[in-house]
Length: 394
Length: 82
Ligand code: FES
Image (tube, rainbow over all chains, first blue to last red; front, side):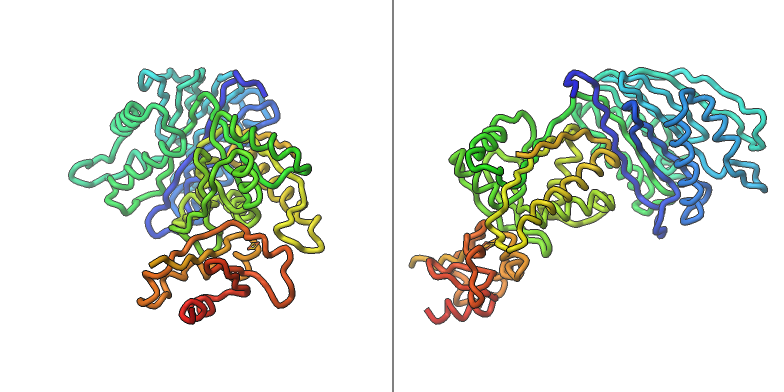
């Protein structure tokens, strides 16, 4: 892994229109084979299921086109040409913004009728010139697309949002015309000024919460915000399972001790090994208990110490469903996910010794289970959350 | 007076076999016991690996005595009898 390369952290946050069980805004992100990241934010006409289907269709189509084609402008034309159109109103069924971020930091963005995105460098918001592409053949009224190119440097951020953000609070005395792009931008600039290290997750959540506040806590539309941060990659080491040969216990523990970044230990036996080797106390913290996940433990200097297999399973489930975003669940698994989301490169060090702690004649299977869960976690981290990972068995 | 130390195993085996419920022990303690005990969690106590048919997880230690197949009721009656 090239340590000096740029890393792009992508995250989003979303609240459905009040009373709706699904969102009409759809966010998708994928990494292509050449390492480019493609994100799409689509806003389907109306709200609820119908809007969701339309936006999903558009987002999926757009991301596939942009992933596979070299010329993003050409794909924009095709998308507009192919998009379903509302026959009465002659407007596209979905607005969208597609961004392709190449590994060297070059970014191409096409924007169709979504609020303009914000480009934030370390010195504040910057205007980016756009090129207007007309698509004459299209039957829709608004038959052009904005096309932007820019280059991301370390410390830069891109913020995209649906009109649920800019129109939040519309009709209220303080914001009769809605929050507006200008004020939204000011708010974001301020956030970054007060917290220069703010990550994509926290920033997108803050924007959505603020928009919701403008709507007086009852969203009038789906509110979605997507953030891309270009930053020095943050590193996390997750260690689980005792090493195959007890002689390696020391090595494993030292790797944890010497790692520069966040550290998580998953597993009772593993944490006891570390505590023994490094002569540090481990204490189970039963002050907060959850029904399904064993309590975490505390080892000074380690960010999180959890039980093993049950917690890992829950982490895998939550990453797969994405349900940790809008849920009140609070336990060792959600804490681990919060740490994962806040990091960019995640190293897994997985021990392969049969764990005597769960004596079961069929125990060799336990290793299989652990491996499979880790594989599932890694798959989701890479593909859904665009993290980089490295797996090593010990 | 020295407090009675109750150590609840929070290792995987004990946890799935009923240990989860034991962590709420403090909420169920009768008033006269509340101030007499100290409840702590522990990693695997190491007893699950040699568990015999009549000695099953979840394990709890009351000072140095081991209670197997522990339930909240069992622990409470055990300490009340001491
Ligand atoms: S898990 Fe409780 S004794 Fe092993």
